Image (cartoon, rainbow, N blue to C red; front, side):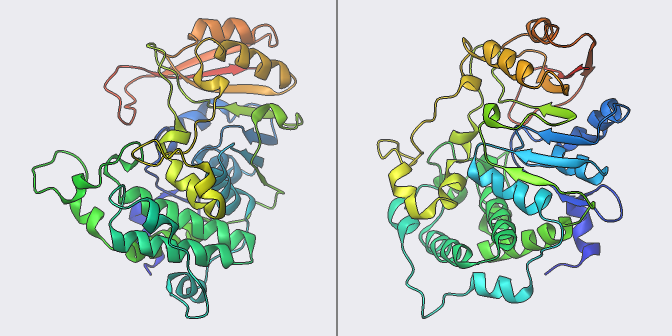
Length: 357
């Protein structure tokens, strides 16, 4: 396992104690954390919730600044990220834990669900067998924080071995085709799972720290959240000007399946070639309903400082969001950040912060 000096090239350093691993997750705000913090640091707040937590980079930044932080995400695999890096303050995976996870034990009967259902979809046969074994071993771990750390490392290992870092189509052939490419890294794709996993365990361990606050990770619909936060950070799924939304459930369904391993078979839409999960309808993907959803959200947290991360060409528009927020906030600030390149985007959209106090 790499030592801290070797790992620092792959980590984002917040301070002497707080190190956040880089991520390949679409929509992450990791590259603009300093810009976001620069515009909220003077606001008066001690508690905050990252309501659509995703990678956890915003929640982690707030934790590193000494705030009492709640991470929330509706996807269970994302909750494990928040549990491992935000709620967890001192638990790490030991070499003995890693050895247990990576070993096929004679006294354990291993299912073959991934091998049986995902042949030639995302990973090769040996990799699918490996995933069945490791996922089973992780689920045996009794310590909840260790289990979440192990899942975090497994997610990262799965993503890094995928073309485009997504699970949106059946395209295993891309890894093995003898053609010239202008994307991806075949060496990375061909690196064994256990090498990637061990590296990401090291990164996860280095990310664990305490800020002496009672931080929490939740797995709730945003409208079911408590209301007692000084600041609410909102980064909803993005709907572009054509009305097409970012479907994280669809992009990362394989990871959601891993953390629901025992009931994965009940969740799969077997009509899909790439074994996606049955669709979950959401107001955040519906261009006709999303503005009203923002209205309900602003009303719910009207006593909190509202911070919305958004894109300048989204649906609803910036002006529509601001008009809606004015129903509940007397002072609104709009800040744009130019020249920020979004993953898998060819447009000229700008990152925008809308702050209501």
